[in-house]
Length: 402
Image (cartoon, rainbow, N blue to C red; front, side):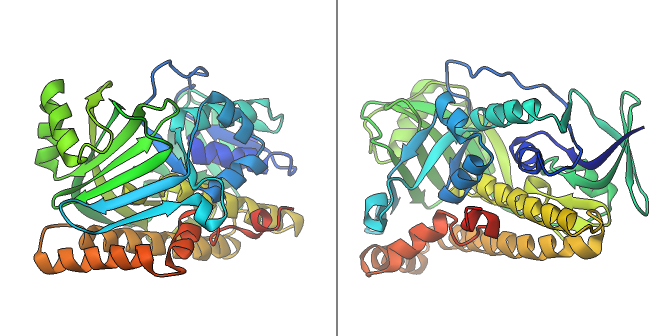
């Protein structure tokens, strides 16, 4: 039996960031991950990317991995354009208008994950158990006991579920899940464009979907996320390259000239999930194990990182005060804080999805007027930028720079 203070199930970006943030606090930490990542990024961009906001940048900087992420490859963007196709509704955000150098970074998940893995691997108080899979868990009064598929047994004062949207730990703890099918699938791919993206993230709303062009580190490469009804998403996936490129150009109003898909096209369903509880006795949930949101605002990874940042603060506080790290009574403070943030994000995403869905003339007029007013009324855009950068959702240790 190997005894730890904290066992993190899931060595993805959020789980690894939690381990890195707790390293050096006098706690013994284990991370259970089913596969060992490839340290080297491939020459071609990988499909899964995240729009990392200022809050997550600050968090990764405090963990000591930001420079490693930047060295791998990132694409800062200083402008964002949003428009409603075939109408006058549009809004443009510029970082310089709010006194910032950039609004965020588009980064391949593999680049962030690789930097965090190296940081955790170098930490003497973090044990990376990979490849390994969970087989059983038993919730004791003072500890949780975990058995791995290879027979190894672990005990921990606190177990953290960072094991994704289909969380095994959440199911083992019998935590109910509220979910809503958005009725859309996301098609993701990498495309090259005739014109340079200019460090601008672009998003087009149309009657049956949302299309985002996210700038990558090469000036004529973009990652696309195209939210469409399931049947249409599958049709687009099955088109030959020439037909797909034609349809993509139409949907994007040819903003960057001709588009050419240069990768495979993957499609996955979009579902909002919200765990009824983010914590229980000996258990805390973070990231997709606790919640998933629509990708239209690119906030999924940022929400998960702030879960981890908040849990780091709570665990360190409990450790300093000599309290039981896994006692649900103490974990409720983490739970209340993060449920509030996740609920607000889910509500905002559902509101956007509802407002921009369909071509009802009254709804179209409402959203076009709303976009126009937001673009022109003084003080509105700086507030929206501040919200999107996540600077209202920082835990105290990131706000104060301690």
